[in-house]
Length: 311
Image (cartoon, rainbow, N blue to C red; front, side, top):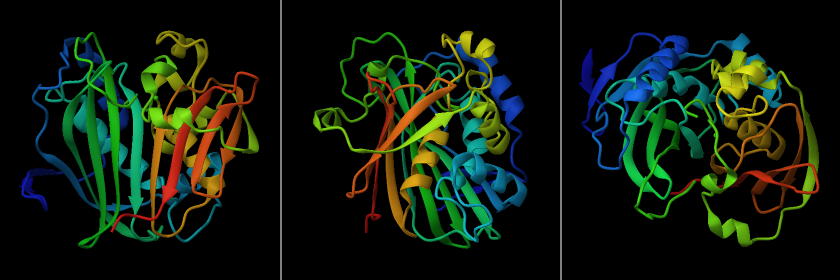
């Protein structure tokens, strides 16, 4: 079924949330045939799911694994990403999307909550690919998700995903898988080089991550990428152990940091988090936060900030 979205692009209207497992399988099978490049054609339509209600049991599981209080009347600021993720996967696993799903690196996310979202509310979701861009390590896509309550835009996000491939274009750019981060040295994930020049933020907490964290978050979010689930499946993609979901790391930071009702969050993924492991959470009084390994090397895994929304 097709229609028109608010910016007059054609929209494919869905009647139910897509099942993730078949989409991930389709994306894996299609990946070897993709030829990513910045000027490749990409889907110009938007996927729309006009009526979504939150599964409260699944929400409670998500809140527990990410450290949010359970039973709140409103959704955690990161939860709309979980609602929109199946639509994003449907777009990115299809033949019209030029980047291979296998090895796709989630490099950053910017999300804006304009107002509190009641957990018992009904929402309309819309997801689109906003464009491709050259990156010094390959080609990067921006995927935009919007959540509306009636006609009001209440939440939106823009995620960047990088397909690494040989390129002679030294274009600047930012630098964990469409499913949150599938591999790559930390030097491929520098999204904001200016932050490297700042002094480390003061550590305010330490988190011990169990080996089954990826399976627990996958069960709550639906994102069962094999790199997160078990050491054996993670080794197929070049990891010595399973790694934490990047969006779990963001959510855990925001659960610790707190956010006002209206907030804009920017986060950049720097390096994968191996499971099990221990992380240092650092933050300041100016809205900035970061996650480092809790060892002498203090490798930075994520940097982010919370600000008032623009406008």
